[in-house]
Image (cartoon, rainbow, N blue to C red; front, side, top):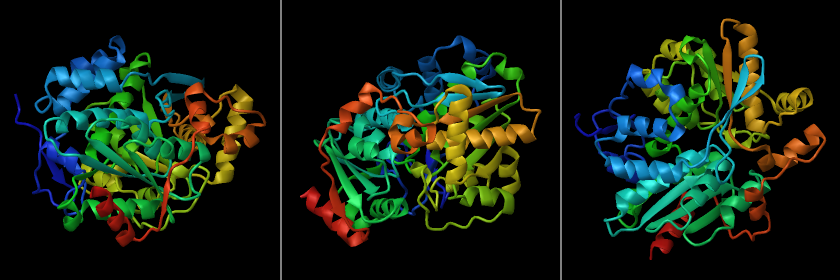
Length: 440
C-alpha cells in the first residue's frame, strides 16, 4: 500500500496537503491550484478489459487508483453508485465521427458528473466535523445548475452560485436560481471572469476564512476533475478494437477543466493519441498552441456561453502536467476556434444531413474534430464531446434548425419556477460583506 496521496500547489510545489484539505479548501492560499503529487498509471489488464466492464466498475477502478488509500472502499463504492447513476453513451454520427453524450444527468450537462460526485465526497469528508461548509461557485452557465442541483439539500453544506447577469440562458438561470433551501444565487453585474475573480479572491482572503469554512465546486477544485476522468475511459469501452485504433478526442473548452481531466486520463494510460481544444473566439489557448504565448484577455460574449472565458484557470494545471513545456503540450494537444456564424452553420448542416441536433458547445467541438480529421487521415476514430442537451439552448438552436427542440421532462419542471436570485455588483468588498452577513 502506498502512502496517502498528497496534493501540491501549481504555484509552489513544496506545498503538500491531504485529500481532505485539498477538497474542502478548494484552492491553496497562494492562489495556485491543487494537483495530485503523482498520477498513477492504470494496469494494462484494466485497459485491456474496458470493453467487458460496466461504467460504474470503471469509475470505481479509477477512483480507487487515485483515492483508494484515503476513502474506504465501501464508502467510495457508495459515492459512485449514488452519483454516477446515468450513462454517457457514445453515438455514431458519420464516418470517423462519434459523439460522447454527457447530458444524460439531472440538469442535462456534463457537469452533473463532477458535481454529483463532489457533493457526495464532500458530505463524507465533513460528516463528523460539526462545522458547516460554504461552497462558492462561479458559473458561465452549466456549472451553476449542476452544482446547485447536485448539492441541493445536502446536509451541512451551503452553496452560493455567482452568475453573470444577462449572459446565461433563461433555462440555465431557472436551474440555478429557483431552488432555495441551501442554494443561494447571486446575479453579478459583470461577466464570468468577474464572477471567477470574486470566488478566487474570497478563497484566498485570510480575514474571511477566519469566519467561514469556504471551498469551491468549480473546476478550481481538484475533486471536480477526478470524476471527469471516468467518462473518457467509458468512451473507449464503447469502441471496438480501441487498442489498435488511432483515436483523437475533441473537447469544447472554456475554463479547460474538462480537457485537463482528459489529459490526466491520458497520463493514466487512456489509449488516445491526440486531443483537440476547441473554443469559440475566446481563443487564448488555441493561440498559445500555435504561438507559445499565453495572453489572457477579457472574455467576449458568444452563443456558446459556457466557453466565454478569457483567462482559463485550468490552463495552469495543463502547464503543470507538462512542466510548462510548449513543445510537450503541442505533442498531445492541438487547438482550433470558431465564430458564432460557423457554429450556427455547423448546427444547421449536421441537423439537415443526419437529423442529429447539436448544442452550441458540441457544435464547436464537432467543427474542431471534423477539420482535424480532414487534415489528418491517419486517425480512424474521432470523438467529440457533446456537453449539454440542445434544449438548454433552444433560443439559439431552434431558429437555426427551423423547428422546435424537444425539451426533456426533467428540464421542463424548472421553467415555471420563480427566480430567487440576489443582484450584486462585481466589487469584491460588496461580495465579502454579503458573505460575512450571511455567516452571522
